[in-house]
Structure formats: structure tokens, C-alpha cells
Image (cartoon, rainbow, N blue to C red; front, side):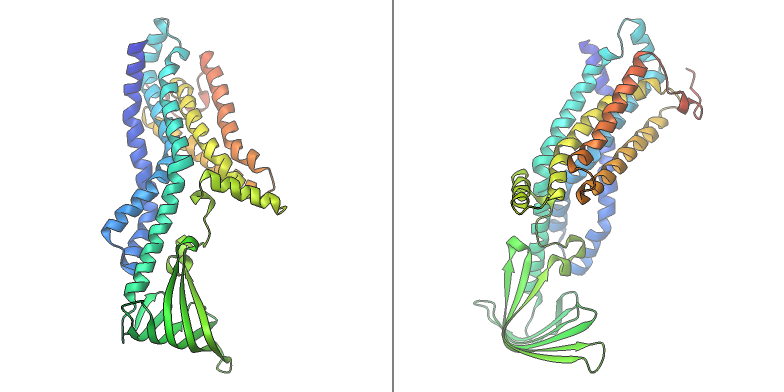
Length: 381
């Protein structure tokens, strides 16, 4: 049994690592266009790009784990079945259930890794990623404004300043044109100004003193003038990088304690924070799904002998896609409150559990999945 345990482990780990790499690359490829845009438009340095990818990596791995563990187990047992090795093991008195310990071990390790990533690594990565983006924006604001030069440190905002104090960063004789609002253009002329950063709120505030605001609409007659002593103009991440908009921590960026506090605060106000509840539940339900994905791969791979080895990859991807669509749909419905967020978060897991029990019972009765063998002929060896 120890030899069999090692043999099955050795069959699973190569496709597992390959699947993780492929899925992480697919997710990263979807973000590479945004990252390339930041390099061009925001002047992001290569070292910062590496840091960004590092911060996003835990979330990518968590996304890839369910598919990777399913694909690894499926391909391993599908290969054993096609080469008649499972048949030989059964002839030697070893049942399919006696082959499960290796799969349970791998699934348990992946479950523990997914739980760690879900509770700690992924929220830390999302927070760190957003903090890095804010630091880049803050550096750009501090360094992008130059004396006696028209510059545009942020999209839609043009600066011209007469002088900048090296001591405290105060800017003198400010001329600014704000074109972020398509319905009106704000022109600010002020005697002094200063950049104030608020990292906790992910905001940059431009504070002007002793100035005038000229507001001009689309119509020539729609013009207003406002004289002020002090005026604050706020620039958030939505003005810098729209894909990262949001001035408060998103649920995916919150620690488990922050999520619970958010839920308690909502309860005290007499409201329901469905989004926080859904996020809390998914931090446990997704690791459970990772574990079940591994177990469900045993009867699928052992009983589905049709189509050659390539069918293992295709069918694993189909099962993962169905799970992901169910997860996304139940999450969206749960966040609206139409169904309980708890039910919505655990519905995909219940789906996998029911499928796992059904397939294991079919496997124990030596019943194959004839539906797929109608389309893919069994390969004779």
C-alpha cells in the first residue's frame, strides 16, 4: 500500500503543477493589458510591476487550485484506467477505495493551502496591491508637478504652478484645469496650494487657498464663478486607475476580523451586509470545493475510459467551468439578498458533494459514464 501511495502521488503532481502554471498564466494574461497601460500612462517601473504580480499571485493561485487538483487526479486515474492498471490492481484484490488515501492526502494539502490563501494571503495581496498603486499615484503627484511647466500628472487635470517650496511642498500661484466631468470644466486659479495624502482612504487631496473657480458648462451662457478661501479637490484611485476605483476596502481586501466587524456594524444599524457575509462564507467554501474536486476526480478518471487522455483535460475544464459559473451566479444572487448568502456560498459545494457521492456509488458498482462513451470511443490497448 505504501508503494501504491507513492505511485499514485507521482502520477498526480506533474499535471497538478502544470495546471497551476497554465491557469495562473491565463489569469495573468487577462490582467497584462491593464498592467501594460499602467507602464505607458502611469510610468510604473519594472520593479513595481514585479511587486504587483507578486501581490496578485495568491488570488490567482486560489482561483487555479480547484481546477488544478481536479485535473491532476482526473488525468492520473484516467491514465491508469486506459492502461488497464486499475483493472490489474482490482484483480490483485485492491479496490478503488483503497486507492483513495493518496488522493485524500493531496486534496487535504490543497485544502490547507487554499484555506491559508483564502483567509490570509489573498486579502493581504489585494490590500498590498492597492497600497502600491496609491503610492505610485502619490509619487506621481509629488514628482509630476513642475515649476513653470504645463503638466498633466492625472488624466483630465492640467497643472501650471509658478514655484514649489522644497521645504514643505507648498505650490505658489496655481492654475489648474479640471476636465474629469464631461458636463463641465473647472478652472481654478489660487494663490497657494498643497498636496495632502490620505493613505487610509486611498485619496489624494489638492488643497487650495485664496482663489477663484470658473465653472463652464457645455453652453456658452452656463458659466459660474466661485471665490473661496479654502477649497479641497479630491483625487481617488478611480481618477488614476479606473479598474481599481473604490475609496473603502473591498471585501476581498478585508481580513477575517475586518469582515466580522463590518457585519456587526451593519447589524447594529439594522441593515444586512450581504456582501461581507458572502465573502466570509466563501473563504471556507472555496477550500472545501478544492478538497471535493480532488475526490470527485477519482471516479471520473477511473470510470470514464473514453476518448484518450485528452478527454481528461477537456472534461476537467468543463466540470470546473460549471462549478465557477454556479459560484459566480450564487454569489451574485446572495449579495442581493434574494437568497441567504450562506446558502448561496455553499450551494456549489453541495453540488460537488452530491456529484462526488453519486459518482463514487457508480464506481463501486463498476458502472461507467456511458453518456460520454457515445461520443468518444474507448481505446483498446
